[in-house]
Image (cartoon, rainbow, N blue to C red; front, side, top):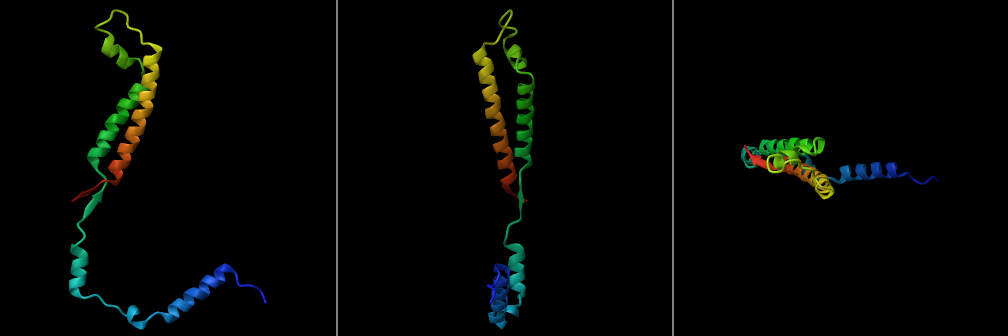
Length: 120
């Protein structure tokens, strides 16, 4: 005799469960108050927030500009105060590290904006 395969075993178990199910469970009807409660009780909510997405987009643009033009913000800050400003290696390293941290924060902000539930 061949052993039953797992799929055949599952099909046999589902057939047994269907045969044993009570008839009253298959003939359940909904009353009008049940339908009304089901329709009105869950407060409608929208998943996601346009405000968080907008803030994330603004920070993404700033992070992209900082990554694309690393010296631009340095010259904007120090050009009027110092005659010929040059950034140090530590400044450039911290700017790169800050870009990585900012990108991770923006990604977290996007995820938070995606999962935030706001009422209608």
